[in-house]
Amino acid sequence: MTCTIANIDQHVYQDGGARYTYGLACARPDVTTMTTDSSVGQVGDSVTVVADPAGRLDPRPADAVGDPDTRAITGAITLGVAIALRLVGEFGPRSLRPSVWRRDARRRKEQRRIRRLAQARARGTLQDRVGWLLPYDRPDRNRPPTRTAYVSPLTRSTGSMWAVKPVPAQRGQVALDAAPPAIEEMIRSLCDLYVIGAERRSVPNVVAGDRAEVAADEADLRRWREATDAYLNELAAVNRDLWEYWVDHGQRLGVFWGRTARLKSWQDHVRSAYARLVRASDAYRPVFNEITAAIETTRTAEQDLQARNRVLSDWADRPLWYLKPTAEDSLVLVRSDVSGEPPPEGHGRTLPAAYEAARAEYHFRLTPVDWDEASLRACDAELAQISEAHPPVGTTASGRPLTRPAPDTFAAWFQQRFGGSHDRVSDRAALANLRQRRATRSGRGRPRSAGGGSWPTAPYIGHDSGGSDHSVGDYGGGYSGGFSVSF
Image 1 (tube, rainbow, N blue to C red):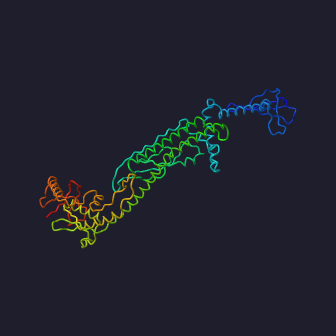
Image 2 (cartoon, helix red, strand yellow):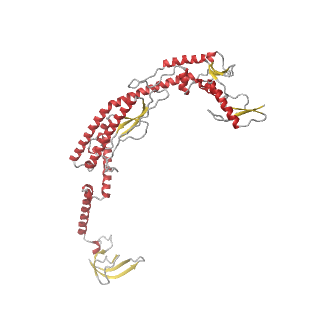
Image 3 (cartoon, rainbow, N blue to C red):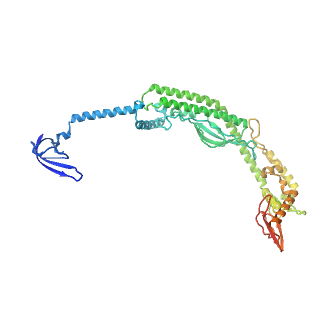
């Protein structure tokens, strides 16, 4: 529709823009005005106007609307170009894909794979195509992981009641990073392994399990460690080989369709790698069974050792002992059930407490303490019965007992409990030497007071006697304290 411009009303805004309102003379009487953001002519000029017959839209210049056919063709061409670019980004050569597109494509593939894999797990159909795929978006996708075997240090020492000291053994289950979900159950059926050593750190391709203690000969421990290292080395080699093959050939496999021959090649490679793992597992299984049996033997020996220690502890904790003075200014450790006399305090002491009191008398009061021979003979008889009732349990492969025999004499029990001879508190020569050293130190260190005397001694940790003024000094070879008595 052609109209003539009758008048123009121009509005200029502060930002420099303008708005034009044109009065029109058209063949249609309902078209009288037209508003635009740009000038389309002067008064008296003819202009082609497009008007909405329903009156829902304002009249506009015809060149502002454009040709509908041309716009449809332009839209179709744009859509086709976008689809082509998307296909190139998804499936085209890597050199034509921008890095951002490649990253986004991997992320989308990984999200689809995760969803499909969760559905396959729920249905129990992990043998589907998605079950044979590995993650797409991984930081090390271009660097095949290299794994080294775990070398466990062997520290051998003996002590306490163990003749062969146990060492930690960490059980682990095989779990390869490059194993697709389709063979998860097959991987779990492989033989577990034991990593022997005191260090606590993660082992590649293994999920840590329970920790235990195992006692064995040094040769067996070394052989077990070598077998474990060989097994771990084979796991690392298979894992590296699978990942390298996946990066080079399988990573471009789609989740839904495509490249059936490449998928079959990847599946064959996985099955071949699993066959290698089965051979390594079968070779290690006898060693695994040996270690498991040794762990059970060690656990049984430890339980028997705990029971034996409880019996010995109950034997030593009986309140039967007391210190008895003699006419030679010394003391004797006596058992009340042997002497037939009640303790002076009304109740006796346990054997460890009685020995600590004897040490206090010897070191702090400089009083020798002897052991009652009849009491020691009674202890020897009781310990012999305990040792006979609790023989050592468990041996190594070479027949070496895992635990030491229970002490069958008082001297053996004392050596095991306190690490020395029970006659230390009876040594008169050492006691005389101790008195001389303390007297020498006291004479050099502090002058004698005018009104009294001073005797060197050390702090007394046993029962107090007679209102002495005790000052704290060293315990052991030299003493710097003393107590003073004024007359």
